[in-house]
Amino acid sequence: MVLTSATEAVNSGLQYLPAPNHQLTSPNQFLLPLTATVNAQDHLEVGGCDVSDLVQRFGSPLYVLDEETLRSACRQYRQSFERYYPGDSLVIYASKAWNCLAVCAIVASEGLGIDVVSGGELYTALQAGVPAEKTYLHGNNKSVEELQFAVESGCTIVVDNWYELETLTQITANLPAPVRIMLRLTPGIECHTHEYIRTGHLDSKFGFDPDQLEQVFAFVAKQPTLECIGLHAHIGSQIFELQPHEDLAGVMVGWLSQAAEYGLPVQELDIGGGLGIRYTEADDPPSIEEWVRIVCEGVVQACEQQQVPLPRLIAEPGRSLIGSACITAYTVGSQKVIPNLRTYVTVDGGMSDNPRPITYQSVYRAVLASQMSAEMTETVTIAGKHCESGDIIIKDAQLPPTKPGDTVVVLATGAYNYSMASNYNRLARPAAVLVQAGEANIILQRESYRDLVRQDRLPERLVEKG
Ligand SMILES: *Cc1c(COP(=O)(O)O)cnc(C)c1O
Image 1 (tube, rainbow, N blue to C red):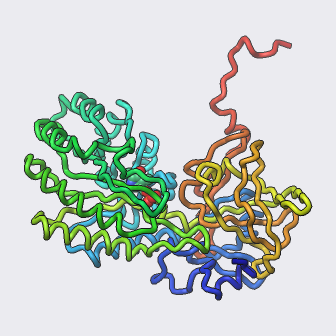
Image 2: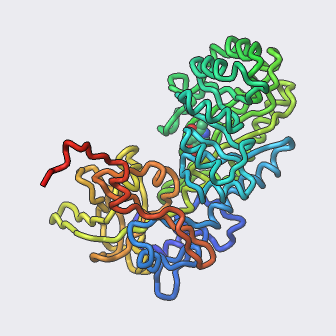
Image 3: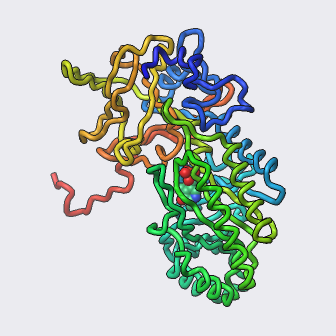
């Protein structure tokens, strides 16, 4: 399918830009943030800010995060749970998608909790003011220090394996009050129709094997310092099907009734995250509301069938909360034309600010921010500047003709971009700005050369004596 122009795509049903009624649009179904428009200069505008201007002001590359899109996704999750689940519920943001102070603070201000997978993410969430009661620590190999930090902070610990269960029993031995834990279990749900990043199948490094359920429950029931309040499972990421989540609900409610037999005070069921987003026109994920409805109906139905009281239902979306809320603006530099073969358009970032293409062969779309209505007549490969042939951001991208200095914007970069960013080739990590109603605030400072050597140490004997 050949796009004519980014602006025209609005009207062609390709959903490059969302419909104007933000309340009704599920951000994960759009390529651009909800506030994206094309202004009178034919420039892309997000959050009321001209993206080309933002690059002038804050430099390049630049992550541009749209606050309204993020807040809207948070609200759609919360409101859908209120609509479709008769019991208590909590949405927690899987912050590994993008963990920083501002994002944690926004999400928490919408009433969501936060899931963290390391001491560093936990520290950031707490620094952002997220209440410990709404913070959940995951991970399949938490260190003793991380576990101690979690215990001190008062967050809930999602226990993944026997080693951790035993370590936690030792750490908490002399505590006056029990520590809240959940158990992560592998549901053994295979998804045949999609090749996504799976975590729910039996051959996964995460969680207790379901065969061990009885043993684990019996062990935990005997530990006075561990209060098992819930069960957790997460089946994978970038999922477009609804069936696996419906199946998961049934499996997990079965576990609930088993846990009750051991007298465990289990009231929470955490169904994980995984809803996909639209990265290209070909992607067609369900809306946030549809996903929540299926999950809720699945749990309610299973509880009726298995005669289990409704648990407090928790979901932990990451990608679908933040993925579509951000774009990355790059500046075009060199071009290499190989006649009859390929044209490389190189930008000033690459695998260090977006490692997903080289890691998962992820596909993205791009627009030329300064000429949104220009015809996309060129097929080019947008390359990064790293010393690695695989450092390609988009292969065969449709763009209008570009020249050095142009701002090319890669879409839907909110999830697993900044959070997976590196300093490969000693590139400084880009800045991120939060945009809202024409205002732009720095939420992540651009790194400087000084930052790059901050942790370097030069032993005295290596210092050249002149
Ligand atoms: C990554 C992860 C999530 C979020 O997955 P998304 O696909 O980003 O929604 C939720 N729960 C756990 C335990 C995870 O590891």
